[in-house]
Amino acid sequence: MSQLGSIIIAVILSIVVVAPLSWSLAIAHRKKSYEDKIGSAEIKSREIIEEALKTAETKKREALLEAKEESIKTKNELDREVKERRAELARYEKRVLSKEENLDKKQDLLEKKEESVLAREESILSRSKEVETLYNKGIAELERISGLTSDQAKEFLLQSVEDEVKHDKAKLIKELENAAKDEADKKAKEYVVTAIQRCAADHVAETTVSVVALPNDDMKGRIIGREGRNIRTLEQLTGVELIIDDTPEAVVLSCFDPVRREVARVALEKLIVDGRIHPARIEEMVDRAKKEVDNIMREEGENAALEVGVHGIHPELIKLLGRMKFRTSYGQNALKHSVEVAQLAGLLAAEVGVDIRLAKRAGLLHDIGKAIDHEVEGSHVQIGVELCKKYKEHPVVINSVESHHGDVDPESLIACLVQAADTISAARPGARRETLETYTNRLSQLEEITTSFDGVEKSFAIQAGREVRIMVLPERVSDDDMVILARNISKRIEEEMQYPGQIKVNVIRESRVADVAR
Image (cartoon, rainbow, N blue to C red; front, side, top):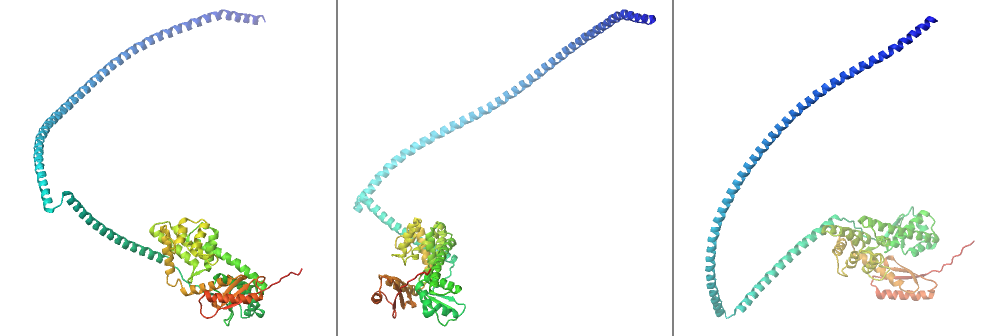
């Protein structure tokens, strides 16, 4: 243990002695290294400063050289510009001198011309004086020779010139009018021919009979009924004459009114299909047929408007258009005629450059009054105008309707075109037949005369106008009155109508009582 303690003590002593020495040596070494570094840094800084001074001196010399070169360059450019300016000024000076010389020359020429003009003016003045003197002498001599004063001579000359101008003017106007008429006639014919060629139409003469096919001949007896009740009922309700003859499997319906004939045809076909033919069933089928014909009229009116491309027509006018399908004018179907007139008016309007749609509208509605002219007093023109005004049609359309027969003057080019289209449509070969129109008018007049009597409910002209059947109201006309009524009607017909042969007046009075068993 004593040995170990001595070792420890020795170590401690050595540490105490050695540590200060080593610390002092370390400090001295570090101080020396710092001094060496500082010395080298100072040397290096001096070298850097010297190098910087040398570089700055070099840069200064270079900048001075560049400045000198730039100044020399600038001086050379200025010298060149000065030379150029001097040369340009010299050129300008030469041009100015030449212009001054030219101006001097021109001035000399103007002075010479002015002198010559003055001399000419003097000569002209002297000559004008001489001319005036001679003119006065001539006028005086002419007045002496002619015996007229100057004013009188002027008046005479003006009058003669005026007369000559008037003659030439009248001649020129006449030539222009003739040329315009020739050209207008040529153009009008061209437009009309073109329209006619582009609007092809089929013409079928309207007849006064319709044929209803039967499934067999036994059906004829059922149509006639017991003691003719069925056929008599159908004729009384429709005003159509049924002709049942030896023609196999067919019944002929005869009537001048196409609407009645169509109602009878539809009703008879429905009865044949139904098979139950008796008076009550006939009345029901006739009512149905009337409604169906009304629907057909409306559809036909819509189809006509669609065919010509006219839209926005009032529904009532559409229905009236459809009624025209069952109206004729001199044998020509009124609706087909209106459609054709609308198409022709549209084609003519396209040729002359006016509103095509408005022309078609006016053409389609020009005969609208014919739809109800048998129901309303007045001509179809007046009725058509009132209808168009009622349903607020365009003023051009109203004037076209009013003027298409020349009752009033047309106020527009479209009205004139409608007139032309109406004439073209009516003038087509086969379009109209005067005899048929006369015949139908006679039948219409016959019915109008009979219905004008008090107590008459309905009247129907049958047998091609050789017979008229009159249904009277039983509560207003007695059996005794029937005899007097028939006599009065026959006398009235004899006074107001012209017809071949005889007309049978058949007055029918029917009383009917119905009751229901419950």
